[in-house]
Image (cartoon, rainbow, N blue to C red; front, side, top):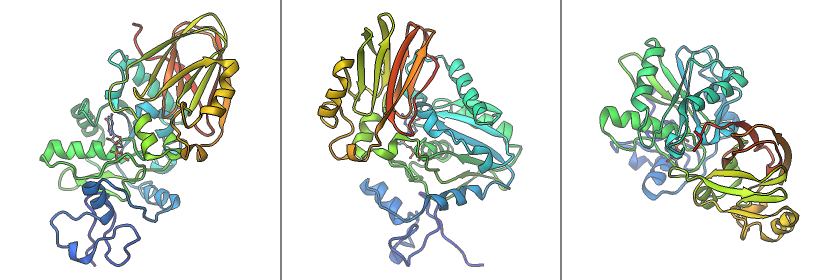
Length: 370
Ligand code: GDP
């Protein structure tokens, strides 16, 4: 059988015939000790991305190869964007395998987060898509929180079988696997990480023992992620990199908050209310009278109300609105991919706006009362 080489960055099969297709390496670079396809090489050394051809269908086909295999599934999601990262067709993709749900990016949440409530919420979200998970783990792949515990949990459930790490793009799968490798071998940055979705293209197998592997699967593209509508610069603004500092607003009815120009909340009716906003610290929040809000948006989207900017606003689907009556206090209004607002009191009516397909939802707050 012919020996194939695989990229140690994204796991895709190496080829040196077609420079525009995935897995390309110039023949002269094949003898390097660390084999990285040109795409990963550029990303790693020059921090730039390269377009390669691979359709969403190819993505799905690759991932669904694991449907009929045995093993444990680790489904990694982004705690900060659960709606955008929970794979609603997970069961169809992975078949009957046991599943551990891993909420990544714990470092972004305020210290006052009630982890037990957060886990419960994640478990109930999984139940909502028909998945009964064996366990829920909360980790920060970047900082290393919870990684050892997760490694132990994986070992406990995997029954000496392979482990498939599955998730949408950008949840931090590569960072997680890098960290696992790093903790066991001390080698830094073996797998490519970046802001851009779709960085991990192929399967990467990391030996767990003589017979079994931890397998990094390609990130699945989910159109419900805000990320698909934005530029690299916009993404840097909306993606929190540090613990989120809550920003509180006391509003009267008929006042509006804009989250950049990407989302909007009109306080329609209710007594004076505190809205505690949890968004990336650099994402501007703008308060105005609801009467003026339409006009302000028309004049200022891409300027004062940014991101998007003047260019990316053309890609952004129109904001669609949804009205909620929230009867209890301590509820969160969640804007997937952006963050959320906690309503401290209750019994209010609000109208929220978000890009089509990035639908707003309500949940019980998992932040401890201050
Ligand atoms: P993948 O597409 O799922 O492989 O995701 P990556 O590992 O490339 O990570 C996507 C982005 O999320 C990168 O900008 C990472 O730095 C960031 N990221 C990954 N893990 C964490 C984490 O635990 N905390 C934070 N704050 N960011 C993370």
